[in-house]
Length: 121
Image (cartoon, rainbow, N blue to C red; front, side, top):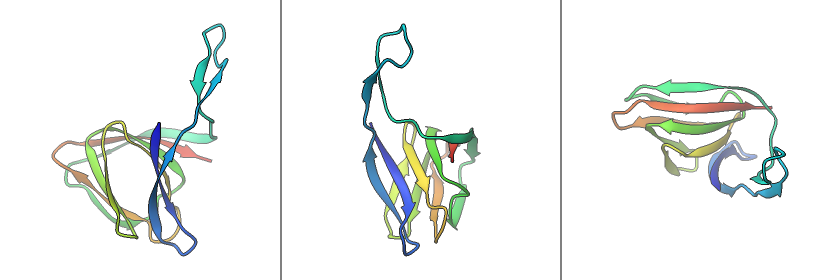
C-alpha cells in the first residue's frame, strides 16, 4: 500500500515523498486466520475535517503530526519546493510539516471535502 509523506527538511522547506507500508502475516485476532498487518504507530485523537468548495489556505504548517485519509472531494496541496499534488477519496497522507513555511492547499471542484484525521504522538 502506498501513501504520501509531507515533511519539513532541516532548512525549513517542505517536500512530498512516496512511501510504502510493509506488512507481516500475524496472528492478529485469534481465532480468526492470520492477517497481513503493518506496523502500528501511537495516536492521541481522531476526528473529521470538512472544507467547503472554494476553500483555500495560504502557507501554513500543520498544528501537529497527523495522518489524513481523504473520504470525499478533492484537494490540491503545494509544498515549498513547488511540487503540487492532488488528493481524493482513498488517498492517505502522513503530514509532518509542523515547522517552517508549511504548505498551501485548496479544495478542487464543487464537492465538499471530508478528511478523516488521526493525530499522532
